[in-house]
Length: 157
Image 1 (cartoon, one colour):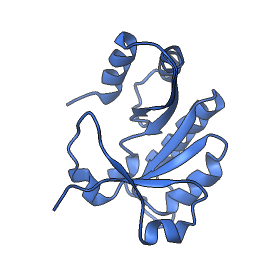
Image 2 (image 1 turned 90 degrees about the vertical axis):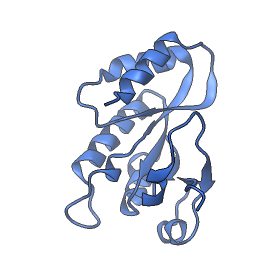
Image 3 (image 1 turned 45 degrees about the vertical axis):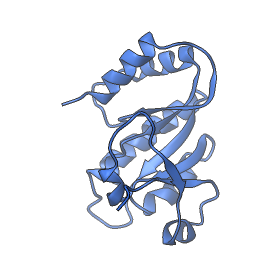
């Protein structure tokens, strides 16, 4: 098993410094063992401007009642709100349509975009660069987002 947050922490400790205006750290926001203050300090020291909850909890945890927020997503919202209160920009990743509207409301001050993670996107291999594309079809239309909605480019068929 890989501890993705620990990998990020190690990379931040050994990485170069300098302001990165549109650099977002992908973090497992439901990690119960992370020291979030350490992450915030290192992100600020390294000049990263934002955070994203990736992979999103909604990929593995589904709300028991349709149209509600599950416990994992609630944890993600609270962590992103906390990072936003420290001046970080946020991107909210989700695999549910309902959470898009909630994110726009709860994270409105710090929210730069939404990342929709479709079931097909789970087949995208992890690599240095993963392509994002503008969300299309009913997702963007149904939610009437006031900011960009992206999705991971699904693997070629």
